[in-house]
Amino acid sequence: MEKLLITGGKPLEGEVKISGAKNSVLPILAASLLSDEEVIIGNVPHLQDVTTTISLLTEMGATLSIDEKMKVCINASSVNKFYAPYEMVKTMRASILVLGPLLAHFGEAKVSLPGGCAIGSRPVNLHLEGLKAMGANIKVEDGYIIAKTKKLKGAKISFPTATVTGTENIMMAAVLASGKTYIKNAAKEPEIIDLANCLRLMGAKIQGDGSSNIIIEGVKNLKGCNYDVLPDRIETATFLVAAAITRGKLTLTHTRPDTIKIIIEKLKKAGAKISVKNDIINIETKSKLDAVNIVTNPYPDFPTDMQAQFIALNSISKGKSKVVESVFENRFMHVQELVRMGADIDINGNTAIIKGVKDLTGAPVMATDLRASASLILAGLVAKGQTIVDRIYHIDRGYECIEEKLTKIGANIKRLPK
Image (tube, rainbow, N blue to C red; front, top):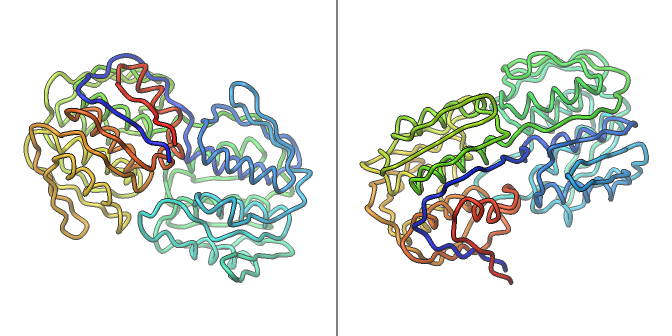
């Protein structure tokens, strides 16, 4: 199993080009199943989850090509299999996103219950109840969702809790349904808006994306389009924390500062100097920062996907801080690894109490999920000595060429072969 070897202690300096958003590109790739015309997707990040999704679409019969700039051209008119097998999707929760498009366009789907990071319960029942309300016949057998419909119909769907993939799945199902679909308590994330923008370009009629109430009026068919994916806000925020934790100076380009306002606010409160202009963010940190309290909640509040990285930052910041995880019940597995590196962290239920220490010390650590991987890399960048991060296949699911990007800005990091 590949590992990352990090020798800490060097401030990061230079420029980083932010990649396309993992959480946008996966639903947009799935949306290509809704049209019989060519869908061209640009700003696609080179990630393991993207590779898995592309393989899945090809397995279903889609015609697909990728150029040297990772622009993906998909034609789903040749799709003749409506099946997402466990072997292909066991590492990726986003596999559930093919369910809505397959049902809407082809009237049937057999999709494995998804796998992915072990960060807590993320049930798909909200997706299934929504699709049932639209007229789908659904059963779960032997770990597979088996769904059929003659024609989906518009419905009023109210989610008991906001769900990003649930909102996306129902949106994609509704664009070809007869009549209007109303989604109440919809997720508000920028990736929802990105998917809606792509679907509108394909001819969908969608209103209210970015709010808690989305209205979709079904159309007869969708056309092809050429669409560039949103920049990745979590990658952006992770590199901002990398600059902050190493007391470095970075310029991040090709990003969307408006999607991470709360991250910028928290880093400024901690003492980082940050300036924003158009799609560029500059950050400079000359001294140890002050610890900041955070509470994770759905967008536009503090993202759960940045909780681990801020715990790493707080662990070597001045003072005591409290981090409350309100989204997932099992997302502190990185804490015990940070403690191995000298962090002073206590867990009480869904709250982490962190006392800043003078230094972290390099140690062998093991990644448990995607964002935990990022937090351990950040800790390794600032720790004294060498840190070896194991199980880094998690990081390859969500960060494009992370060791290459870090090396270019001064990090001493290399990938160790299996």
